[in-house]
Image (cartoon, rainbow, N blue to C red; front, side, top):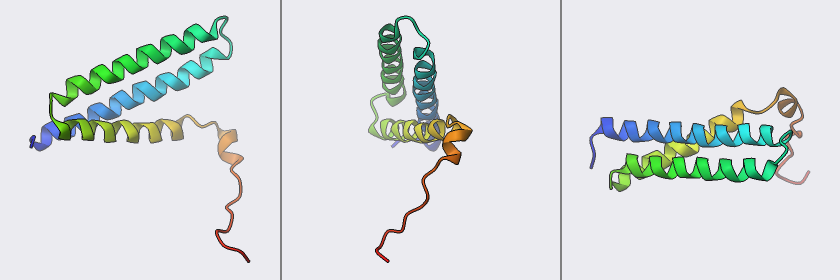
Length: 104
C-alpha cells in the first residue's frame, strides 16, 4: 500500500487529467461548430486527449493498482465538475420539472 501523500497525489493527478480531457472535449465541441474541417478537429482532439490521459494514468500508476483506482476516481470527479461548470445559464433554466416517481 502506498503512503497517503502519494495516494492524494494520484487522486489530484486524476482530477487534473480529467479536467484536461473533458475541458478539451468541451473546447473542441465549441470549436467544431465553426471549423472548416470539423472531422480533423474531432479526430485530432480525440487522439491528443486520449494519449495524454493514458500517458498520465501510466505515469501516475507506477505499477500500483491503488494509485490507478484513485486516479480514475479523480478523473470521474473532474468529469462531473466540468460538466456542471460548462453548462450555459439557458440549460440550467430549461430543466424539466421534477416528476413524481409513483402514480397518483
